[in-house]
Each structure stands twice: as structure tokens, then as C-alpha cells.
Image (cartoon, rainbow, N blue to C red; front, side, top):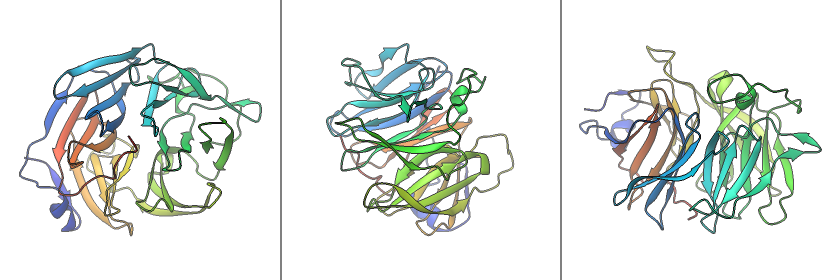
Length: 302
């Protein structure tokens, strides 16, 4: 059975604790950036140290989309079904077709300075691309290469997908990582990894972010080494699901901690998918674990 730690009875209405995790992929090094295509009924995800972008569906199983991904991390679909991906090695955000073709750069610098290491990315319904730019990928870790930061902050940026103009949405977050929009797209949630907290910011009419506030601190677990707040996703009711210490931590739209769904390995990111958008896909170490939920994830743009 699932190992759940419920802080609020609502968690048990969102997830049936009597089910088992189902492992659909294994053998990776560290999976990240899962995204679900409703049209293709296919999952796309990265193996950062494995330097490979994969897809998976029930018919074909696991398939290589692209090798030598420059340590690609977070991914998103744009309105045309192209994959937008964040690359650590090249310090850029790139775009490609789902088969890996028509590869091009969307963003690589800001005001004449190299980006730090774009990490995670989402697409607004208006087509604009938002991405976080922390320093994880320029540190000498398993996912990065040691280089000098040219920007004096770790920002959240927005890119016009047509003109490729880049703007700074905010430089207020200490260590931005995963990000997600509320159902009405008026609030953006951002993982502040260094400070173990989930932030919320207002999305202004011009797309910039303001009024930063703490939406929720992370729940403390028995094994503090088992993860940090990383990926963030939202369901149709406005609940926020984060890969975080223990596995997956869930909070409601008011910031109330609902509880923890434990995973077998340190977990990097997650997404909703499946035909009914009620399957949760969790990148847990070099595996992908799935579980069923009683709520739909927000529909993806493609």
C-alpha cells in the first residue's frame, strides 16, 4: 500500500491509500522534467546525468527522443506541441519538435549576460514561456559543470515565443526551481529550494510577478536527506503537489499542509497525465512511479 502521512483528512479524499505504486520506467540515473501530451497520450521526461530525453506510452514503452541533451532538465509543451527544454550545459532554453527535429534556441542570455542554468519551464495559455534560472547547473554536481555566474540574482524569466524577446519576471526569489500556475493563471507558485518553502506571486497584466509571499513551508519528514522542494504541479481544484522531502507533499490553495505521499527514492519532479488526467507520474531517482488520484490535474496545452 501507499505510505501516506496525512496532516489533513482531505489528503485521503485526493488519494486512495490502499493502492500500490506502479513503476513504469527504471534503470535511469536521475529522471526529471516529466510532461504529458494529451493529444499523443505520451509522457516526455529527461535523464539529466544520463543526458537523454525520453518518451513513454503504454503502446511503445520507453523510447529515446534525443541523446546529448546538454544535461536537459525541465520540459514543457508549447501550443503547437513542440518541446521546450532547459539545458544546464549550454545555459539556455531550447525548442524542438516531439521527434527531436527543428531544434532551436529560445533564450540564452539576458542583457548581454549568460543565464545561470535554466531549470524548469512552463507555458502560459497566451503562449508566453516562463522559466526559472537558479545556479544548480553551474555547480560541480552530478547535474552541472562549474562555471561563473554572470547574473547577480537567480531569476524567473518570461520569453515571447515568436519574437524571442526575454524579460525578467522577478529577481526576488532566492533559489527558484519548479513553478506552476493556479487554475485561473493569476497566481504563480515557485519552489524556493534553498529555503524549503513554496512561494506564491501575483501574475500582473504585463506578465511580470509581484507580491511574493510564502504559501507554505515544507513538511518535516523523518529522513531530511530524502529530497528538497523541486517540481510543482496544480490540480483543477487548486491543490499544489510538490516533489519534496519524503516524495510528494500536497498543499491546498490556502497553503494548508495536507500531507506526504512517500516515494522509494529522492524525487525530482512530477506531472498529471493519463486519459483522464488523474494519474500522477513521479520521477523518483532513476525510476518513474505512478499512482491514481481522485482529482484531475490541470489540462496541458498540448
